[in-house]
Length: 308
Image 1 (cartoon, rainbow, N blue to C red):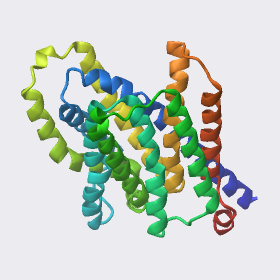
Image 2: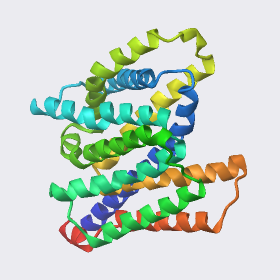
Image 3: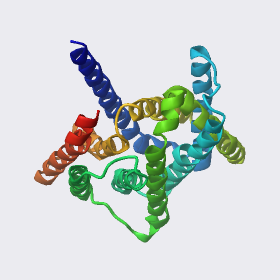
């Protein structure tokens, strides 16, 4: 009876983790369109500074309400400081900077490389066993992403090259973060860990962003864009990071990363419902491949089940 109860508890935790990952992609999926709108009037580094600064302040308040900010081990401060570069500083600067230079469709395509980096790094470090079924899942989902983005007519013109490279480096940066952050998050908890990530990232991002913002004519930024900026900081940053950190403690790193494939899928159906775009055979095939890929990559291997 105790075993059944434990199994149910584990199943519930896994369900909540995957629900959290789905929510993360829905929230992150709104970022390219909203971000593009804000970047018409605001410098990229300023958006990064506001995004990181607001999120850091909100997290500090949340964590102080829950308890204290002290980490379990002194060495964790250095570890989270280093992780903040991969998970926040480099990630945010490269993503927002790349978004300002390239097309949103290119961003959607190149974001698909995150699970590839994560799975490769996790396997090389011995943090995750190399199972063929997971590799097949990642490749299947990647094929779906390629087919889906082709329907949106991706254009890799010379004007977008720098932005494209920045998004690829952003994917590598976040892949490293996902692959190596699990242990320190498990020791300190997701909220406290992510709080310190943003505190450390604020040291560079906030002063740099504010300096550039003061050089800009702030009065030229409409009120509605400030509202969208706060939305980006809270609903496209704070909430997803917390949910992602929680999920990292419940499932394997590549399972977390593979959900990135849902972003172009969410974008497609939003375009169909809101912009009345046509559903084609290729887009339906892409949707099927993406969902099959997510299933194969997140499905526990029999060796994982027997060892767990």
